[in-house]
Amino acid sequence: MTALKTRIASLIVASGPISVAEYMALCLFDPADGYYTTREPFGAEGDFTTAPEISQMFGELVAVWLYAAWQAAGRPANATLAEIGPGRGTLMKDMLRSLHKLEPAFANTAMIETSPRLREIQQRTLANSDAPIGWHDTVSTLPDAPLFIVGNELFDAIPTRQFIKIGAAWHERAVGVGEAGELAFVAGPATLDAAVLPPDAATASDGSIFEFAPARTATMEAVAERIAASGGAGLFFDYGHLKPGIGDTLQALRKHRHDDVLAHPGEADLTSHVDFSALALAGRAHGLDAHLATQGEFLLAMGLLERAGKLGAGADAMGREKISSDVERLAGPDAMGSLFKVLAVAPRGTKLPFPAVS
Image (cartoon, rainbow, N blue to C red; front, side):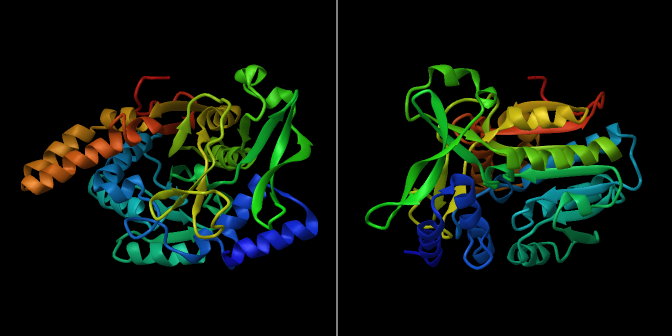
């Protein structure tokens, strides 16, 4: 057993089962043994690879979108460029390099990161950047200025609650301890208001799972509130679905392989699919327009193929093959192109560059 698994089991024995959201929070963010506080999870040597780590093209095209959004907002001189949940800083590095060519005075730069370990990695990644960069714990401490904010694979790691159907009721799913001392899923006494459930819940079979993530909605609301008050725009990428539905998407990744969710607390990444419709609704509730698309649709609309062609023109055969492979990984329907979705938000009426799909 991992050190964290032993502590979680002891906690449950002493106080009773904990919710899936509590379990996720402990696994990911425990100060002593949490996944994001003890290791570098990104890249080939870690447990998963994100889009910015696949190719510089991802960050370059996001930068082009940000520049266009800034122009649509009237080119505010005091804007803040922020990334929330910035990994090891690769996306910001690529964005700053591209934005420096488009408009050196585009914005002040901020990184929103709570992990001291990841902050150190980000500082090393961005050490040669010409732009002054400030680090923040939350959106609330950002300067009072138009905010242009990006988040890549942020929401999937924010803990979600799960509910399991038993008879006519949906009971909160929890983590308990079995007779042999192992961690196991159990049904708790708390139930969910039927008004929160999606339409297909009425016909769901016993044992079906519904995921409900108020903490993700709260994060989106904090961002939307700042943009509504000060102007700007937001762009968010993650894997998930465009419409709410029934299904268990909680998963663990360890060394680029799927792992048992309960097997290695603190040593595996825990995530679940993001309900983009809930995030869009949160943005609209604060007076913003919210646009949804797949990652593939977005990147192709922003000129992925054209950028790949320019990079390939100066590359050898092996380089061109890698660029082609990167395009497929980022935008192909059998790779990240369909599984990953994109949400763009901005004050109503802002003419953002975005695929006309919703």
